[in-house]
Image (cartoon, rainbow, N blue to C red; front, side):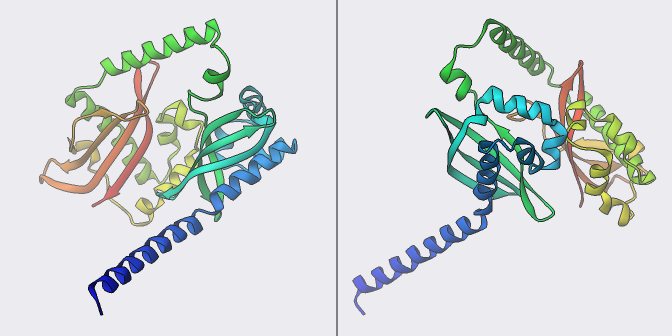
Length: 285
């Protein structure tokens, strides 16, 4: 067999593999655009209640029916005509769609949709319209909107200046971990839920948090030494792209200088002058 033929065969195999990968990716994510198209189809038919009920529980917790209707009116999504999805992916159990919605009058709105699975079915968890979308493209911001933007920017600057030093960050993390350890010990996350930020409380409840960490209870993970543990940060505190304070580290047993077999990533939102818990990821090592 000539060298040229070998090269052609190799190229053919590579192309076939790439095509297989692309085809598999489209197959695995095919339900994402179907879910979004079905959602917007209901809106186009005026069946907003059915569309609302088809969203994820977290979506409905963060936005009631009246607020949902206002959102559709303010964004003009109630005048939906069709949609085109340019990007779709699944990562960490969450689906992401990016594309453009076309309104009945021909205008377009770029948006992002995040989806999660509930009872084996993909459901819409959040809808985000970028700032460069409908509002800024088709109308000048009102004076009150401009003032609101200025206030938001001022708050962001204030938060940037308040990045806690390491000792304070350790204290913040310790307080969270002690409450978490107590919840595991008592097998009840009610008090833990009451301690988190109001922003997170709107998206979840104590039962959902219990379900997320039920394995700590069933596996009888012992966190009783947490109040006396030494909290060590594995990297300096930082702000993520959403402006949340992120603390990453692990817990050490002061008495034996051995790990309690626990690592953590905690995120906080600035509320009423304090850093309040917005997300928690803890795992045993």
